[in-house]
Image (cartoon, rainbow, N blue to C red; front, top):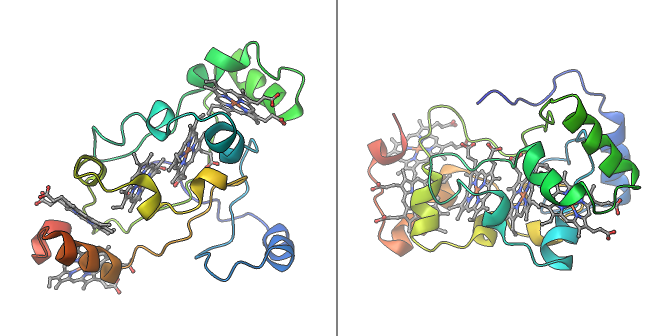
Length: 166
Ligand code: HEC
Ligand code: HEC
Ligand code: HEC
Ligand code: HEC
Ligand code: HEC
């Protein structure tokens, strides 16, 4: 994956947010994003399906982030006066992708075929709880080896070491 956390980002905004919105369950403070994209508005407000935007989540090893083009299918006409949507239109005009910061990452030595779990009917929100209400994407569930193993035992999926480790 090419998208990485910015190492140079100042911690100050995180600390302020953490003080204002203590959650206790969050694994990391929310990352700043180039556009404040509200899952809350799109998913809960307008009922757009997760797979409408993350369309490779049931087809490939990695779930995708939708392209600027996909956003613009609506935002050429919707909410064009809003500052965050203007930022989006700017990327579109400059033909640049939005440099979203990656929120969730499993270590490189772990094989996580996203589509296999989605096709086994594990719900998105089982692993990404709260995303339907998120104003800022945040990981609220730790992806340690224990959580993978617990569910694999319950669902009778493989727990052989080489299932998840290259
Ligand atoms: C209208 C498009 C859209 C819909 C619908 C949508 N998302 Fe997203 N999602 C995005 C965008 C854009 C990002 C990247 C920006 C961000 O992280 O805030 C993102 C980020 C994420 C991330 C974090 C990815 C990372 O960086 O690691 C997760 C997890 C996620 N979405 C899950 C979901 C789930 C679950 C649903 C359904 C409940 C959903 N999304 C619905 C557009 C969408
Ligand atoms: C299927 C249509 C659709 C798609 C695709 C879509 N949006 Fe939206 N978006 C909406 C609607 C509807 C609203 C609510 C507009 C309103 O309340 O005025 C909205 C609101 C927003 C807002 C909040 C604007 C504000 O400040 O009130 C942002 C930011 C935004 N969208 C960004 C994005 C981005 C980035 C993408 C692509 C990842 C995207 N949208 C994809 C329909 C869409
Ligand atoms: C069994 C748990 C699980 C389920 C179910 C699941 N995810 Fe994920 N998702 C993960 C993990 C773990 C990662 C991090 C993968 C990585 O770093 O390679 C991830 C990453 C993502 C990302 C970020 C991709 C990126 O490269 O930034 C998005 C978006 C996402 N998931 C959306 C979804 C959607 C939409 C669904 C339902 C259709 C879903 N996920 C179902 C565990 C899950
Ligand atoms: C909530 C339940 C759940 C969680 C959490 C979960 N998995 Fe899975 N996983 C499944 C199911 C169900 C399957 C499908 C098994 C099948 O197709 O027979 C699966 C399949 C897989 C496969 C493919 C196995 C094969 O035999 O092809 C891999 C690899 C995998 N998971 C890795 C992971 C990793 C790594 C994590 C943690 C980051 C994780 N899983 C978390 C339920 C889960
Ligand atoms: C269902 C998936 C899955 C299976 C099966 C699995 N692991 Fe893991 N393993 C993970 C994940 C996810 C991590 C990363 C955990 C983290 O980042 O905290 C991990 C991390 C590790 C690490 C590194 C520990 C660390 O602190 O980073 C070792 C060593 C390891 N696993 C060994 C094993 C061995 C040995 C087995 C077989 C008994 C096994 N794993 C089976 C998912 C799995």
